[in-house]
Structures are given as structure tokens and as C-alpha cells.
Image (cartoon, rainbow, N blue to C red; front, side, top):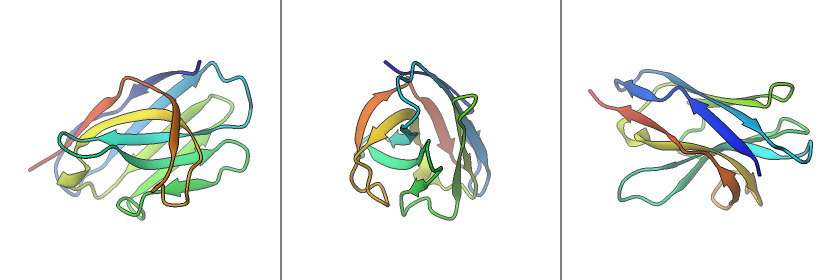
Length: 124
């Protein structure tokens, strides 16, 4: 089973930036999709972004497109989410995870495994 070590959460004012990193281990295949989903209190879980290991194709939810960028260092099994122009509605626990069955804007996806999560808080 894939294991994750997440880092980079914290507090930031609206309009600020944060970078989340996740080091994954335990892959049994070179082909996988890895990324982030988030969970805010009282809200449904939301797929944020993921990236394919083989072609580097990124996927973004409409709510973060143009503000968030995902990177994958396949050699280091490290996925990074650069989050810019953060908004209060981005406040959530962010989980690094492996995905499958992903639609282009992550309206549909399934999760294979995920980490313990890191808190992101955006407030004035």
C-alpha cells in the first residue's frame, strides 16, 4: 500500500500562497495518478488536482484552475501543489492521495489510498 508524508500546510491571508509537498512510497507500478483532495467542515470532499506519472498530464478542479499548479518529480516520488491567490473558501484539510477513474475537472474520481492530511487555513 502506498504511504504518504505530507508537509507545507499552514495559515495565510487571502491572496497569499502556500506550497504543499507529498513524498510517496510503496508504488507497485510506474503508472499512477497522484494528487490532492480536500475536506472542509460541513462540505463534501473535493478533488483538487492530480497528475499522471507516465505523461505528466495534470487535472484541476474548476475551483482552483489558474491558481494552483501541480508538479511531479517521478524520480523522488514527490508531488507538489503550488497554491497561489488563496481564498477563504480554500480552507480545508488537504490530503495527498492516489487516484483512478479521474475526469478532466475531477468532478468524478476514486481514491486508492491517502495520507493523514495537512491543514490549510486562509483568513484575514
